[in-house]
Length: 69
Image 1 (spheres, rainbow, N blue to C red):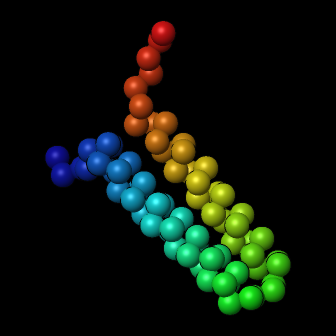
Image 2 (image 1 turned 45 degrees about the horizontal axis):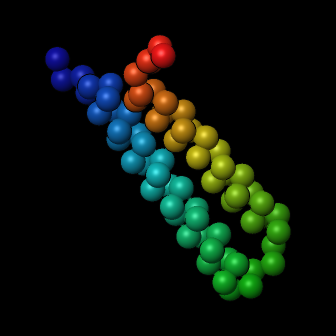
């Protein structure tokens, strides 16, 4: 009976993914501000950020009900 509601679980996962996305965004901005020139690391961080964005979008779609127009 103590199982979390699927909606609450989705919200918790979304919050964690959004926080990770913001952290990556901050890290990328910091590297660019500091003149960090390692393009390989920047590309890796940007790919991670994009993957997080895709996972966030997928979870957000789960929250929306299927409406047949």
